[in-house]
Amino acid sequence: MIRAIATDLDGTFLGADGEPSARNVEAVLRAAELGVRTIFATGRPYRWLRVLEPLAEADPFVLASNGAVRYDLHHRGVISADLLDADATLAVVSDLRTAHPDMFLALELLEGYAADKDFPVKDDREHLLVDCSVEQALEQKSPVKLLVLSPDHHVDDLALEVSPVVGDRMTVTWSFVGEAGLLEISRAGVDKGSGLATLLDEMDVDPADVAAFGDMPNDMAMLDLVGRPFRMQHCHALLEEKGYPVAGPHDDSGVGRRIEELLGLPTSGPA
Image 1 (cartoon, one colour):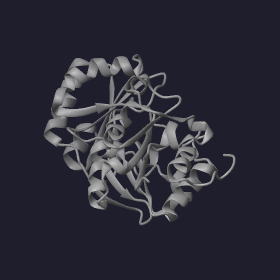
Image 2 (cartoon, rainbow, N blue to C red):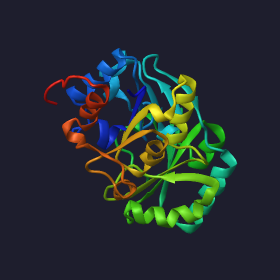
Image 3 (cartoon, helix red, strand yellow):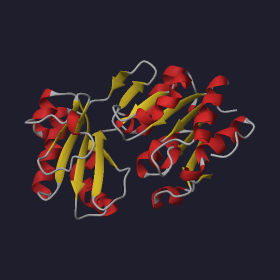
């Protein structure tokens, strides 16, 4: 019997349409009835959690910004946050701009975000702090994650180039594979694993009694922490190499099906 569930969102709990399946939702709600709490762990900022509205009654916690922000979905409030160290991040930003002047930077903040002029802004322009550079936001706001974008690099190659520049001053990871490489950089030692460990300690739950689900490199610290780690069928090669058990396809309620199995619940039917 597991005591808690931790799951990534995109590519894991959410289907290809970006929404949770009815079966996944039902599995989490039924787990909550048994006293098994769910923790959603995502690279998304806490303001991008509309998809979790059907699960508010399960009273889940959310680890946003790759574990840097702990958020109470039910009460719509930030519990705590691991802010970037301004001096260390400013030094990293300066080194990145020198070593890779063709890359674009953005900074995720509790107050919104700041970005270089040419950083692509799509669906969240209302939260962009205009006339505020990345460097200014680091010194004046509450930063939680640095983003590095390169239109000309696959994300795996980008990580190989950027990681030596950053070194051990900050934590580099990524959660998205697309036409342009995008890296996500947190305060040193901060990741989904550290954020989950903090919550589990507050909940008095042993990580050995937790099941976790993920599909990308930013999930690995979380999967390594728990006693029952699972990767999705279509995941990054780094997770395949780790040999985590497979939960199933993210687009066929793989998380929900595995929760039913772990908790001995009767199947809730088709996704």
